[in-house]
Image (cartoon, rainbow, N blue to C red):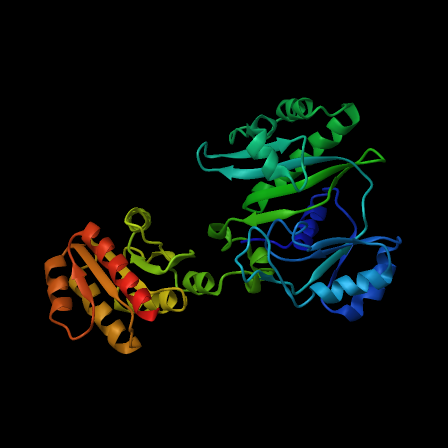
Length: 393
């Protein structure tokens, strides 16, 4: 679960992490009061969306007058922001964060992430933060520093001092940085976070470290105990299909292709998508219906897949272990009949009662292709979708 920048900064303040002074705007009528409260004669207008790359996309703007601030607010509010991290439809801008500008001397990159490989929280830093951090990572990867935190002892002052030395910070800034990293670690652990990214962490002319940005992700698996995080979740920023799947306890991720996938088991789902791509197709989604798949879940899964207008065909790949393939086959037949599906569907069944399940499909009246071999099933759905596309043209 992602937080908006203003929500991340509210969380920072609870841990006494230095950040900018700002106010949230949800309607243009609030602008005058907000500018008056913040003071100053320059302001930063920031679109609140769950995406990075806002600055390059025109979602972060520095304004020098109330008139300019009003124009930018009306331009952004209610529109959709398209960045290099969003789909072509972009993300809806329902709120804007307005804050005071900072006198910046240096920009640093600082992030805490859960590193799956080392199974530890990793501190990532760079002395060259800012909008071009991706370019730095690509062209000068040696400038991106990684420091894993020992989960037994936690973050240690000596480790923090070494990071400060690597960043070239003086004694005064190092003291601030050490304090900052210890507070972020405490916030990270107590709130079950999976990511805290501060880009940039700036050094001001006055010699202070300020968290100018805030990207925070909460581990979805821990939301049951992070009730306050659940309360501030902005579902308007999430993919509607993925959100619906989550509520149905299905694991779904939308992709850019046109072949829908329904599989039981995450590893099998990944292998299925890889096979589709190997034979020249493009998967439209990752969908793991789980080991306890039944007729009801099959119908729910079909509904989510078909809500994606890009889908031209569906490959169903079920391995029957605890679940019986004949029951799944009956569910597929019922779903196709009930939902009046008119796109090609190829079903591959393996495991418990696979033969019986394939026979059920073969003897049914629905237009579904049954296949025992996964390679042939992948090739068949690609062939059928291509025929469908050619027929449409």
